[in-house]
Amino acid sequence: MKSSRMTTYILVAMLLGIAAGGLIHDHYPNPATQKLIAGYISFGSTIFLRLIKMIIGPLVFSTLVVGIGHMADAGTVGRVGGKSMLWFISASVVSLALGLVLVNLFEPGIGIHKVASGVSSGIDSHAMTLDGFVKHVFPDSAVRPMVDNEILQIVVFSILFGIACTAMGERAKLLLDGIEGLSHVILRVTGYVMMLAPIAVFCAIAATISTNGLGILVNYAKFMGEFYLGLVCLWLVLILIGFLLLGPRVRRLIMLMREPFLLAFSTASSEAAYPKMLEQLAKFPVSRNISSFVLPLGYSFNLDGTMMYCTFASVFIAQAYDIPLTFGTQIAMLLTLMLTSKGVAGVPRASLVVIAATLSQFNLPEEGLLLILGIDTFLDMGRSATNVIGNSLATAVVAKWEGQLVSDVDTAAMIEEMEVEPV
Image (cartoon, rainbow, N blue to C red):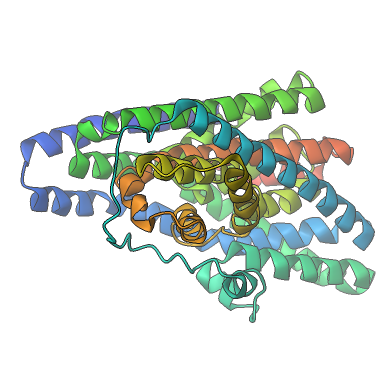
């Protein structure tokens, strides 16, 4: 009932945000005034997202270490990690390939006839070099990743820490108990923060509409419509695969993911949905040992919506500039994106950075990013929501493979800690 009420509140907040933003845009035609008002309105969403980021680091660390620490041995960790990566890589190939097929089928960029003028997009195309990638994955400090919210680096440190605790056995029990206590406290804090979700959704939508107007919802309608149709196709493919592996129970999983799905969609942030996903997966029920291990990995390696967007947008830009791409070139682009899109969690405007690097590598005009920059927020909403579906399915499937689709004391405690009564 609480979950259903929150879903309703978020939907109502989205509609009210659209209405409020439209009224502000019409009442104050001066762009400077619109931007000023939007800045004040966005304080609500900014506070929420900052609070979410505040708890993401300790939440990932504590739940991941406890999850690994409760596994039988390091071999179990390796087995679960291997099964997770098998799903992630397979889902990545499906997402990238589907985006490539649909952009060639729809041809959204045909007819734009843009001419390269050398204008900079403002996106650093060299942000995903091999050196930068290695530094982005492996931390040089145990503390800095927490401060900078580098999820992948937190995951790497947490895995090593958890494996060490497992190897030490009884000697690490006291430490593990302390970290488990920390995880319960963080989950309780998360419950308090999530009460602000409807306000954050209203502020985020209203601020965006007030500066761009309702017209932004119909501008680029062809590109946005075809991309969202592609996302729906991806959702159906992922759910179908989930049905083949989980059976009819996949319907319950999708129903449980409504709230985190809407939260990720309306705030254009996968991070915002992470704590709620942990709670909903516990209700499925997925053992906490699995969810606290697979879900953080998924946030780094299983960004299905982002990967589909990368192929879709890259070929769209080539079409817009009337640059033909051979089948071989597109396959090479797919394989390149397969590698460069891994580990982008935490990189600012990650998808745009990856696309910029791809355009540069294949001699496509980087300024083509300007074609999609204005509507990237609305596209990011769909990408973030897609990541929720992909990661929830991945976690549930790995749990089934491990025989961990069960409710245990830890998952029950997680639900109890997060389902706090409003004050």
